[in-house]
Image 1 (tube, rainbow, N blue to C red):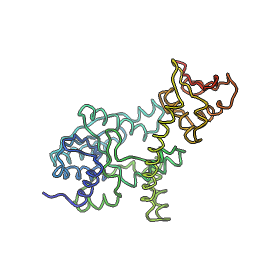
Image 2: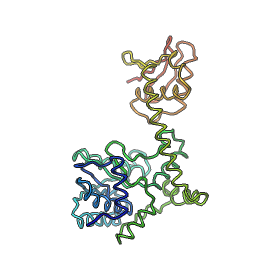
Image 3: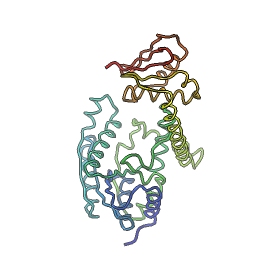
Image 4: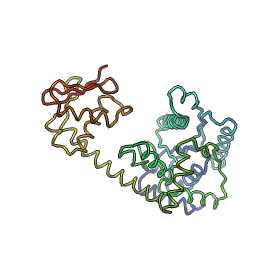
Length: 328
């Protein structure tokens, strides 16, 4: 049969990064859009070079009525024509968004990945999603304007847990050219044109303007994300080492040794405090730079000074330590 040229390029990236290994089970998030259809074809042809099993998985979010049903039918038909098993899940994103106080976009994303992860755990499989270089650039820009940390500016990784992104190094233009070459149709989600969604606004307005300033803007942003990711991984290791030296536990208290903390560079000091807060709270949501700063000020405060923190936590200067406690 032979593997098309673009699919071979994707295979080379997959092989180089070890995203798929012989005998793996791969669940593809197949929406029916151009990106996921492209990845479907690439993974199908790739099986000639690397034996693995493939399953196509589609989620109906309860948003677009008949259009969504047509997308599902298209995805099922595509999988069937290539002899690939297909599974369908239905969720109610509008209800979940209302219940949790989320945007519809975020609610749909959470529920989609929840269904994919349940299937992956059941099948002991990896999940392949079709994010590409423009998606990466959009993610970095969104994180930047939302005031993200360094980790957020790292964007998406090619591999994270069960999740793999084989198309991340490739441009949208390459994907569309491949589909045109294969004469392969795909579906277009009407909500992708709705500029009330933040990502769509970045995709259709912000990123094109940046590309007018510099035609290679997308690639440059993606490369910065890679550099940020390497930097973040390095800092994570330093933070872990510093945490082990400066932090100890006493019953239900987390204790920060002030003398050890003061030896650290400012950046690491803040990261160790943030890690301490996250471990005590058992979550990251609602924790901000302001809370880290409040704890840092205790290193210079008098004994007994206390500050209230989110997640029912308090931090207090006690002797040569600052203790962080969660009230259960």
